[in-house]
Amino acid sequence: MPRHTHYVPHGVIPAVLLPFADDLSIDERSFRAHLRDVAATEGISAITINAHSTEVASCSFDEQRRVLDIAQDEIGSRLPLINGVWADGSLEAARIARMAEAGGASALLVFPPAPFTLGQSPAMAIEHFRRIADATALPLIAFQYPLATGQGYPRDTLLKMVEEVPSIRAIKDWAGNVAQHEVHIRDLQSLKRPVNVLSTHSAWLLSSLVLGCNGLLSGSGSVIADLQSALFKAVQRNDLAAARALNERIYPLARAFYADPWADMHNRMKEALVLLGRLPRAVVRPPLVKLSRAEIDRIRAALVAAGLLPAKADAA
Image (cartoon, rainbow, N blue to C red; front, side, top):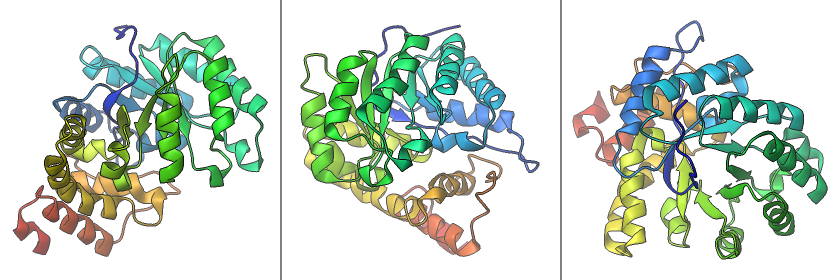
């Protein structure tokens, strides 16, 4: 299988959505079209699958493998694929990692095990990542959750993890705290073996990027990968005026996508793609449910405010 060897996660990495048919099966035709659409965006460095954005918690192991196979077939020769590792146990995480490597993934996004909500120790976190690292040579991205969830790694734990598991090459930072986020950027990206910080603070992306992240990994990229790429480039070249102008377009969508409850963020992105004519339907798997007409109208208004739909669509 094609693989982009020696890939180090960096830059703009959209996390794509997973379309479903009305019977809740994977809509492979729409998924292929969605992959081609996002992959055509100038300036992105990879694409993420089998993550929050593809409703991975509702997908079986075989479905996750099929998602990777489709993505590999459709865009794998053009872009590195980052495959999520979503598992409550380390043995299952290692099994997914082996599957992803065999399927041609170039890196793995490792979600924290749900049992950590009950408490964790540095030894537990290191053991989880070591089991995965022993199963694959692929670079790992540690998904950093807010500390309040119990699934986030405290600073000292994070530093021990990256020291003892050398294949951790980046973190997807959802710390949710500006000061903690800045500490991650300063500490991890200045290590002797640097670990890139990929922002997933899409609700305040401009603020996050100006702190110095070496990339971003976001489900919003399923809708606005072009705006995210342009924003990242503007920040990289220290063009604050351009960055602010782009942020003015992103802001209404961030407000719409990341409203409470956050569990609906990718549900909202599916509805946005339907409104933009890029998906035929916005079907989600339970426990997610169809959004209300009022919320879909708010998403339409945000697309108009972002300049992605004509103003007349706001009243349609």
